[in-house]
Image (cartoon, rainbow, N blue to C red; front, side, top):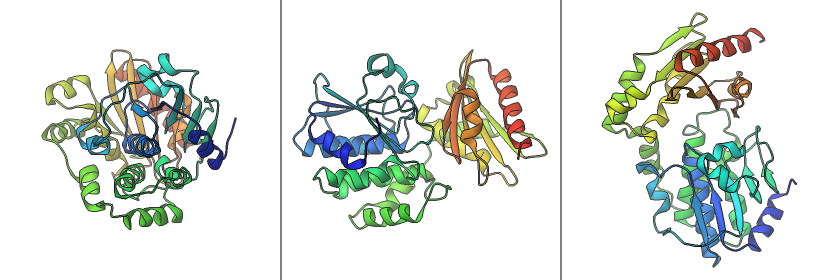
Length: 317
């Protein structure tokens, strides 16, 4: 059932031994909201643990400083920034059908949890938690504020995407007043690249292809590229923004080969185009400006299907 934010807060106050689930291929919002909520719950005297099917990449490790692992059998299960149970990866067989509260901001949320609070107007789940955590009676100090700022900054492309609202800026300003080191966080999230990431970008840029007279740009990341450069999943994260940055491109796509019959797709689109609407054709979703999906076939066939879907979408406008 749908709950209000105050009802979600009241429910959390009554719970103990809480597992907080993040989505696979984690980003700053799912880790930022997970770590901030976990820290808040522990300050209330509760046991809480953040769980994710993927490991914490180097650039996100600061979010979990001081959150040592706690061993317990969860009695309450919460998901943050997870639009669909299928996005839990290897956690899905364990926790599928058992999630008691979902806090999310994706319009494509499937309402899989027993209770859900979904606010599509929020730029990030971390923006929602800026209101929820004080309802729990926990102060937004510098540490928690930094975690929440990280999620907002990364989900808005450092306040560039169309999901940014006046409220987003007001919330971010409030966090900065808590002492958040925004320049340090922004540099780590957007300006710092490993050598492996730089080499991977170089190889990926050589694959760029244009369709529909430049309306569509597609970049491919193969398993061979990842292996030869020694790149991690964390290194591949920022490549999705490259096609969108090309002048004249309406829909930018990055396709990542995961296996012989699985390709992960990241779409980026400026206004007024809707990346989520395209990804929905493949069972995915997200936001108008940024969305993702999986296509179960080889790289070449996936690219063919994706370009056809994007072209069909553009033909309807």
